[in-house]
View (cartoon, rainbow, N blue to C red):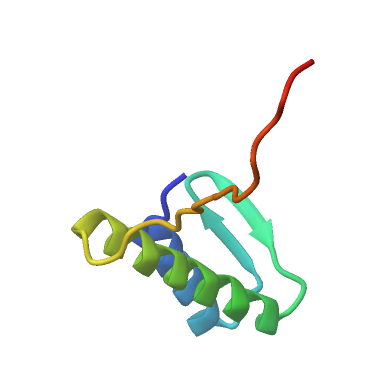
Length: 76
């Protein structure tokens, strides 16, 4: 699910108001502390930046390259 700017805005609004409860897209979330709310906002911001970089072609998703240096399998 992509991160929406409205999700980040809802977290910022809660921080401005000193609240720990955030309602976004009909979902109500209560955070245990303001620190947890800040961490959630920072995580969403980083995730959105990564998604934007991939979509714009600036960054590519991680890829794993597997190699095998052995002789392979010899069946009987």
